[in-house]
Length: 373
Ligand SMILES: CC(C)(COP(=O)(O)OP(=O)(O)OC[C@H]1O[C@@H](n2cnc3c(N)ncnc32)[C@H](O)[C@@H]1OP(=O)(O)O)[C@@H](O)C(=O)NCCC(=O)NCCS
Image 1: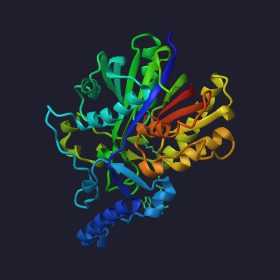
Image 2 (image 1 turned 90 degrees about the horizontal axis):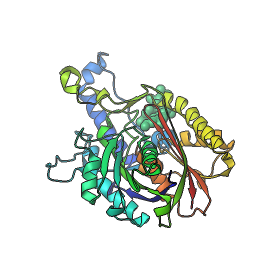
Image 3 (image 1 turned 135 degrees about the vertical axis):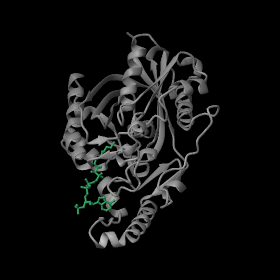
């Protein structure tokens, strides 16, 4: 069995960003139009009037101030309220492949590796743009990587599940190094007409090189000390989009074919599960919670993260201990915790311990204990 490290991370951030104020202005324009178009039916009590959204509510409830997106104009157009991403021909790189490749190139560069050093690619994300061929195989070709590639989806936990899968391959000698890439266009599945959730998501892609420790040469290495995963079925975060939608035409475009959640229930149920899993994982590795220098948590909701770390530490965490990126990125699904890792790692001293943790639909929870080399 080989020891395994993360030897490089990468991040692709879209050029456009939408502030809460811009998003709310577009949403409220839609609300006014809807209420005016349906004034008579609302008056008769047949249709419920829509309520306005509010930027202060969004920041208070979630901690989100803005989000990066692949297409700002399409999302903010009150007549459209979804990104406009043109259909590409089969001879062009897909948009997920393009984002993934950009993040992967940075991860490879930080790892000091080229395509020739990588034996496999895993694309791990919440929303794959097609069933096949796997986006991972397209990324493999775009980067000139030999070996094999496959896609996997464990919603917001895709990255940590991908890292465990990659680490297993490297440990067993099936690959010298595996590239795990998480391209997320969450705005593609977000219902921008839903007041409860229109502010939640943003777009980004991350990449991680998982490599055999004895081959790693970079200055950015973390030992993968241990990984631990947990899933428990729940309908509280759900998206019913799929290939069978066309077989039930009457509901093919219903709103459950987009992201739907019971936010309050998710908050209540997931926080204790995450804190318990991380505590258990650390205990199994004889690590005191107080010895953990940094928690790179999934970035969905600031209060959730505060609560989770407070349950673990018995006190509030500092920003240095549990860094926040959701204020400018919003929830980027599986990319979120890796963005935090990528952005907040270079100050750590050799030997420093950290926990990368994701949580989301499934429910699915992942914990990866890392030690700076
Ligand atoms: C989504 C979330 C931010 C909502 O925050 P919340 O505090 O639970 O808010 P609620 O939905 O209970 O709504 C509270 C009030 O604000 C109102 N409200 C909801 N959306 C609003 C908006 N955009 N603007 C203004 N008010 C709004 C509600 O109508 C409700 O009003 P009421 O008290 O008069 O009924 C929060 O539940 C959350 O982040 N949960 C975890 C989600 C998560 O991690 N999901 C993982 C996804 S991968």
